[in-house]
Length: 298
Image 1 (cartoon, one colour):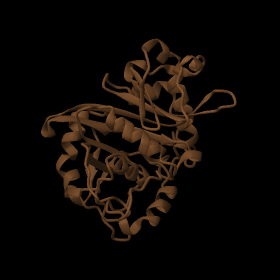
Image 2 (cartoon, rainbow, N blue to C red):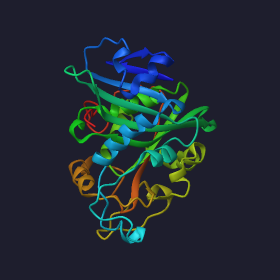
Image 3 (spheres, one colour):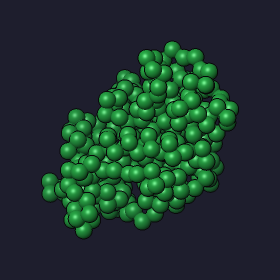
């Protein structure tokens, strides 16, 4: 199953034409649009190796580098400052682990050669969430090309992911980057971070979505009654210990810019910020992180 969104329009594509999305026969899809950026939902069973190869290339060139502690925690298999990489096989194993997984991709079409450049994607899964009488969505991976950050790509990918599940009531992710958290807030009608909501639903959402890399993750922070101290006596608030030792220099710089508005606390090595938001349509005047309008940049 595919559908493509351009400028807030959803366009159905039949299965035969959808199979051309890998690129070689994409021109056969008759779609007229003004904005060259398009976003496409792809159900698990339609994610081909060709699509995964494009995602792998974007990930390997843009996700980040290993931190100084990565060699220590990997018996020197990982090298500090080397790029974090994932191949096609590993992406399929980690991100398409059940038939409720799906992928949303963002592309820009070149009018010169009619080719599509992948600029971002998000892998997701969904599961029944009886506590709120609906479905939970978990964002398992979010990647945006460095040249396209700050242009609303991440927020649009996440918004399309949220809107693809009709009965979605809650959505969450773990990420070391605060911009990913902001983008998810934007996708949820700029709902502010609610620490009580996170604490109340964290364990149940993890259990319901059954994401493999989170199955053994430890929740850390003051809202979970777990308060390890940093050297500067700051306490983390809502983290998941994922043992993913990526470099945090860019993240720390981003946190410095939003320090006065950031309520999730500091980030520990080998940890990621943990958030969940209500996913139902919420209409109110409150926004995050600014007081006047939704932050549309991530």
